[in-house]
Length: 301
Image (cartoon, rainbow, N blue to C red; front, side, top):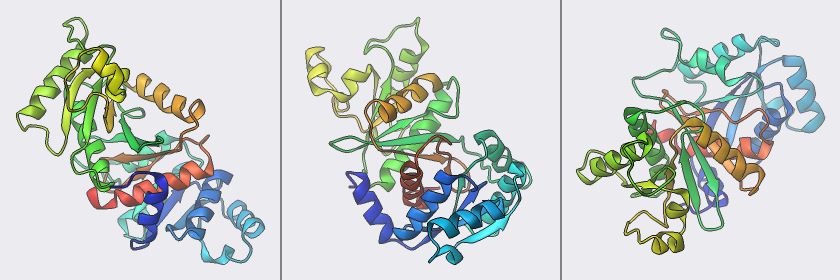
């Protein structure tokens, strides 16, 4: 089982080389991530965007290898960059698709197009991976579904479990987070958690162990779980955290990035290929790690 991001990078280096198309790649962090991926032999990147900006940047940064990068000119038209990137996936010239300068909505519009997109019958959700001193943790969903109902949460769990399996964790422990370990009929997230718990015990959610409701401390701290008398296979040692809504997931993800300084990566599952929608404010390193996580999950889409 992969325990940290360095092991993840080693695994990707030893796997067949994948190609990532970057939509609107004419931004420094995206191009730096592509350069890092090339130098580390993680992936090849097709850079779709404003040709002169991309060519000049590569020539300045890596003159000796600048000619190795395929660049497709769409000018500064972000919609054209997104649509072209999706087309390259359809043509099997790229294995994954990544957001560059364009906003998530522009890329998703192209991905979800009924005729030319990459949509499936699955629900798309974001899986955040973050590296703690002990292991890689996963969290969903902080980027797609504003207020998930229980059907949405089943999909969020499934996407997170797929990533866990790809990382070598064959039976991940899934904590359904809310504010308390007690079920309250006045709080729907606790009711959903209890239902998901029972569904897992009856074999309706497979490939993992689910427990909830659990507060965050009970999910990740054995001491907290013991003090509160929680007898659970998940409490104190969760591998996957399922948050109750997008606000909780977004705030949690940015807190561990900016306060804890943990290394993070994102992958969106539910389309025909992994979709990499790191924030435009994320560093080149985060985007490079996101590429590696996407490559690891290629086999589970």
